[in-house]
Image (cartoon, rainbow, N blue to C red):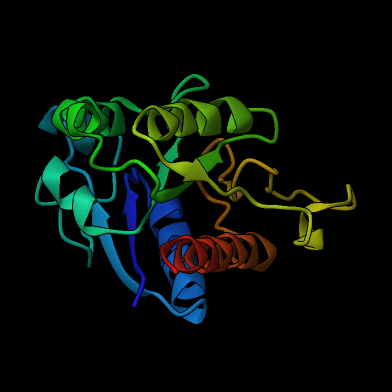
Length: 200
């Protein structure tokens, strides 16, 4: 059975919800799925002052070598000034040994994100994640336009051909919309199916 890792960092729970949806889609696509998060690296006083969500049902990833155990890796993180946050970057910066060994070459990857606004850097953040995955040798699967719910301008909605997205609002009060979660499930399923085909 194809093994998929959904690896995320979430400050306020939006990306955690999207990660769960990606995992649901990957399971629907026939994969065995693990959800892991990267460690919080912000100082405790910052975490408390900003009211970060500190409880999670998902364990912290054991270390970079764990990535080699999967056929597909889907990475999710919110934006920080149009790029991935330092917490995810700190973890990805530890994967040099995997890169040197070519341990992830030929695996499948994807990314998902959250921003405060519709124009808050969703696609640049996705690319900051995807670039790392491509350097590590992964074949990228985005959110193709088979998922038609990402189209239209009748309401606020996330979605990008480069990966599933959600919009949190400036104060974080907007939770992922059902169409955004459906996009995450769609991408997760596509990634699992693609990994199964490449493994076959």
